[in-house]
Image (cartoon, rainbow, N blue to C red; front, side, top):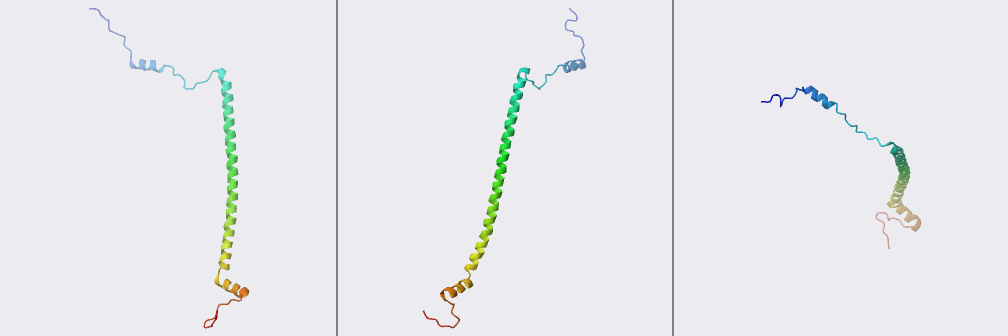
Length: 120
């Protein structure tokens, strides 16, 4: 019989875990090669400038639209006030007392008194 053929030296569990911990992990950050750093930086700056310019244009357009909206609101308020004045004037002109006074002054037409006989 052959002795010690399948026997291995004893290794504790602590040594195995230390061996696993020593494995070097690769970093997740990927840095571009030095040849591409300048062009990538230029492209990035260009994109940032385009985004900033576009946002500035949108900001100007929004401000201009807000100014136009304020002008329209002011015009609407003026028109509403004028409308109220015209409604009051129409109510005054169409009142019965005003029509009777105007008919009497211009056309010499008067409302007959009660019991008065009138001919046509």
